[in-house]
Image 1: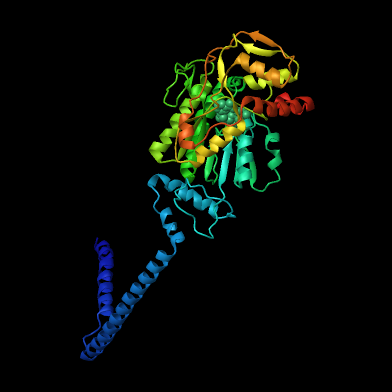
Image 2: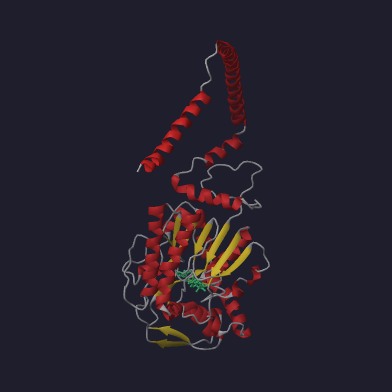
Amino acid sequence: MNNMKQLHKHPSANHRRDEEMMSTHEIPPYSPKSLKHTSAVRSISRSVNYILKEQRLLFTLVGILIGSVFFIYQPSLSTVSSIDTVTSNELPSMRAVSFSQRDTNTHYSRPATHGATGRIPVGIGRKRMRVVVTGGSGFVGSHLVDKLIARGDEVIVIDNFFTGRKENVEHHFVNPRFELIRHDVVEPILLEVDQIYHLACPASPVHYKYNPVKTIKTNVMGTLNMLGLAKRIGARFLLTSTSEVYGDPLEHPQKETYWGHVNPIGVRSCYDEGKRTAETLTMDYHRGDGVEVRIARIFNTYGPRMCLDDGRVVSNFVSQAIRKQPMTVYGDGKQTRSFQYVSDLVDGLMALMEGEHIGPFNLGNPGEFTMLELAQVVKETIDSSATIEFRENTADDPQKRKPDISKAKELLNWEPKVPLHEGLPKMASDFRNRILNEDEGKGNK
Ligand SMILES: NC(=O)c1ccc[n+]([C@@H]2O[C@H](COP(=O)([O-])OP(=O)(O)OC[C@H]3O[C@@H](n4cnc5c(N)ncnc54)[C@H](O)[C@@H]3O)[C@@H](O)[C@H]2O)c1
C-alpha cells in the first residue's frame, strides 16, 4: 500500500519541482542595474515605434492618393471592379471562369452573362469557354458542337452512342479543342467546365419507346448527375426539354405558361414525364442550390444528320421519298406540327445559354403545317412522283403543336430564319448521300 502511495505521490512531486524550475528560469533575480538598462531600451524602442507609425501613415496617405488619381484617369480599369459586384446568384460561374482561365488562350469575347458588366480592360482578351455537350454526337448536339468549336470554345462531348454517331463529329477529331467521351449520363462524371448543354436523351418516339425505363432513367438520373456536376464546379447548365411537356395541348398555340395535358401512364410518358421531371430538377437545383440554369422547350426540328427512319415525320417522309417508297401518314394527316431548321435551334440554344433569362423558352418555328401539307412540300422538293400511304394513328399522338415564341423573341432577341422550303433541300441532300452510300448501318440507330 505504502509503495502504491509512493508511486502516486511521485509524479506530483516531480511536477511541483518542474514548476519551481520554470518560475526560476522565467523571472530573473532582482537587480537595480538591469532595471536601469531595461528602461533605457524601452524609451529608445518607443521613439523608434513612433517614427515608424508616422512613416506608415505617410506611406498610406500617399498610396491612397496615387490609387485615386490612377482610377480616375483610367476608366477602362474601373470596369474591373464591376466584376466584384456580382450578385450571389452569379458567383458560381465566376468561380467556373477561373477554371478555364488557368490554361486559356484568351482570344474571343467573354459573354456578358458571367457577371461581367461593362467593358473588358484593354489587353485582357475575352475568355475561351470550356463546354460540355451531353448527347453531342446526336443530331442537334453535333450541330451545336460545330458552332461552339467555330466560336473558339473547347468542347467535350459525352455520349453513349445510343442514337448518336461518331461520324457526326468525326470532322473535329483532329482539333485539339475537341474531346469525345463514351459515357452514359446515368452514371456520374467529373469534369471542369464553364457550361453544360444537357441534350443526352433519345428524342424520337421509335428510340425512346425502345427501352422506356432507360429513357426515364436518362431523363431523371442523367439530369441529376449533370446538375450535380454543375453545382459542384459552378457551371451554367442548360436543359433541352421538349414541347412534349405540353402533351396533347388544350391551349393553342402553346405559351410557356401553359402547364400541359399529359398522360402520365401512356407509352410516351417515359419521355414526356421524364422531361417534365428533368425541368423540375433543374428548377429545384436553381432555387435550392443557386445553380445557374436555362431551360429550352424544343419543338420539332429537322436537318442534316437526323437518324434515317427514326419515326419523326420529316425524316420519315424525306427518306421514303428518296427511296421511292410511299410516305406514311398516320391518322387522317390533319394533325399539325411546326418544323424548325436545326441552325435556328442552335442559335436559340446559344442565345439562351449566354443570356440572362432562365426560361423556360419555347424554341420552335411557329409556321404550322398539317402532315398532308408537309408531304406536299416534300413531294415538291424531292420527288414530284412521291405517293402517300395512310396508316392507323399511334397512341397519344398530339393533334396540334405550334409554339408561341413571343417570349424568346422579346427576351432572347431570337426567332427562326430558315423556312421549310429552304431547309428541306439541305436535309434531303444529306439524306440522299447517306442512303446512296449506305454508310449508315442499322446498328448505328
Ligand atoms: N430534334 C427534335 O425535334 C427535338 C425536339 C424536342 C426536344 N429535343 C431534345 O433535344 C435533345 C437532342 O435531340 P436530338 O434530336 O439531337 O436526338 P438524338 O437522338 O439525335 O440525340 C440524342 C443524343 O443523346 C445520346 N444519348 C442518349 N441517351 C444517352 C445516355 N444515357 N448517355 C449519354 N448519351 C445519351 C444519343 O446517343 C444521341 O447522341 C434531346 O434531349 C431531345 O429530347 C429534340
